[in-house]
Image 1 (tube, rainbow, N blue to C red):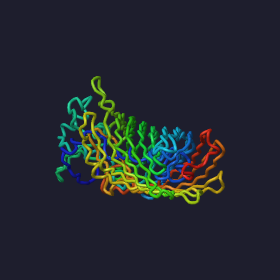
Image 2 (cartoon, one colour):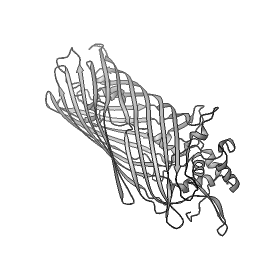
Image 3 (cartoon, one colour):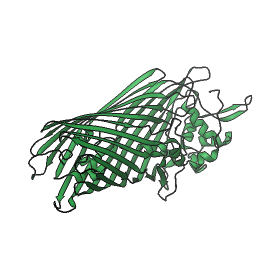
Image 4 (cartoon, rainbow, N blue to C red):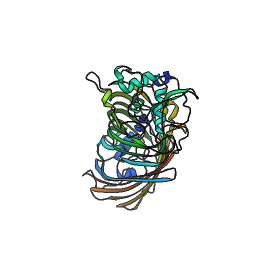
Length: 536
């Protein structure tokens, strides 16, 4: 056993965090990937003041008011996600490529007249994948006697168990019939598989649950799914100077995660003591809704310069999570190998505690943008966006804050996003584009994931600032147009397989490459498919 003093934390804190949702669950659904039409992506999404693209209804709804003709488009492509980890000098790589259907939408432009203040009333719809969760990740290396088992043992020690009560957990068929709503499920699984043992050391006055010395570890995760966004827009053009818009957003969440953590253990003499594996299965489904309001103003009638402002209400999510876990061990110091599945004692004829409904309210989002065109051939846009992640709210279905709501307030930060982009028309039919995005880190440096009563996941990943580079090409024919975009995302993160003050971070380099093609058709009434943002 590892000769280390375990600090006992107030049991009331552990009992207050009975639910498993925390800052990491909230952050998963916050923010958006840069995605949509290839033109929007190619310009780095910096089109809030420029407008004239179907995808802007999701950032500044007033941008649809720029349209003077009907439009319909669809986008699809390929995504490649790669991760490279380094822990204790050991590097591991994972890579995943898959095709994707990214966007489909239309704009119906309704001209009111030239002699009225209200020139156009436009309507639009757009679907796009606002977040892509597809990701593979692996890490591993030497633990130098650190061990996840001590985190499990510490969870059990918080409850002040006697040796007799500890042995009861081993002996009774279902410990939750005797100690209902009192013990952490992962700690119980650790006890029943030998990963957490009992130590009696009279010389050191230690009588408590205890863990083992870790030799090395290996972690693997597979994440799939995404958030689908459906936007319904109405916008207005007033005297070709002021554009107003509103977008109702509907969201569909579908996220699956599988993780497997394996640890090899040492005995007291440094020899092989077998090991254990913890598998976690998690699924999140739900829907959300928000409202976006925007305005674009041309301050000088003779100038194409535009200013844009947009505000997004919180997104109100109704969510359902389903989870399960299995812990198996072949610890040689134990008489027989063990395995334990969470559903063995949390699912009964009366209750199923592996499914939980809760609500997430995201923060307000504020967007300021500017854009202009030059000589009818160049368009340039820039925007700034702010969202205070720490103001997110996790609540149960009755409206009460969940136990780990303080982790959201303490470990998430306000996120600043900057976007710039440009489009240059080389000849009337062809354009080139480029863009750049920067988003600040969402997590504070001291963020970590505490185990709650029903939590079986000990790992957490603190992402840092994100940089995105984009390039694009565009063709405008008489009726049909086609755009191609390439996007490169890169960010670093610090991963921890479990919570231990001495555990060094696994350094992770995350990258995503996306190739996107959009095909669209303009109004039959127009001579050609000219750019809406350049031709005002």
